[in-house]
Amino acid sequence: MQVSELIEDLRERLRPLRSSLFPQQVLLELTDTALLGQSLLNGQPGPICIDVPLPSLTCRQGQPVEIDPLADLIGDLLVRDGLIDAYVMAALPQSAVQWQVIDWAGSSAPEDAAAELRQLNPDLGLPYPLAEAAIDLQPLSGAPGKHLLATTPRGVVEGWIQVFHQAGTNLDRLACPQTCRLAALQGHLAEIPAGTLLLVLTTESESRRLEAVRDGVPLFQWPLPQEAEATVAEVKRCLAFLRRNFREVRQVQLLLDGEWEEQTELESLLAAPAHQLNCAPFASLVLQGLAIPELMP
Image (cartoon, rainbow, N blue to C red; front, side):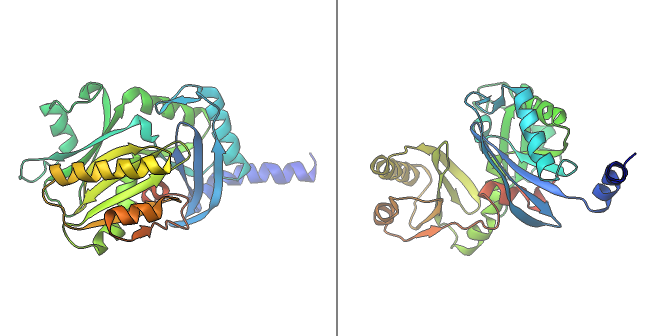
């Protein structure tokens, strides 16, 4: 055996030990059209190491369709960056997840809220039975007795588990992007006056959307068009809807995630300056929230 082969064999033997002594994590945001990710060591994010598009129809509505190619791609990317032994924390595609706020009618939330919700089996207007859904319930900060419920069909979760298993990764958790974004926004929410309506406008490669949050409670989410003029008109319609349906709204704050050429028009519409979201050194708001320890199961 050559010296180089001996060294490589020794490295392979030491890999599991090194992984256990110096655990490293990978944050990965999944979408229907791309993968975005970076490493996390001792709570500190590394450089953006994964930013790749996915071929058309590789995923459909958050469901992985081409399992083998996806597994090969993820495995190859992690091997390339020496992260194949890292623990992967991934956020499901936005398109796969439905969310809503659960209010336990003024009482304190049950100890096992998820089990209680399944037993009650309320009609939540989901496009699938609650019994066939994977659910995530997170208490809402500053809103006792309320949870943010995110659901997705079990088949979506099982599909992604299969992808990561075939990729040879250590999948630590699959999170909901809505929960991650709200966790990342907590610092901003703590700085605005009570009762202020926060409008968060997010633009990504595949979509644009508006999210409304007040006092830490998500109220509303709506897709936005890609065209600037149409976007301003749609934001105006959304604001009118929010003023009608969520009690009196006196103060509005605008938070922009990404670049918006219509920023001036939006500021004029809301009669308030926009604040640019800066999630650096994280690659996205979702990855920032994914790294928050309180979200760990």
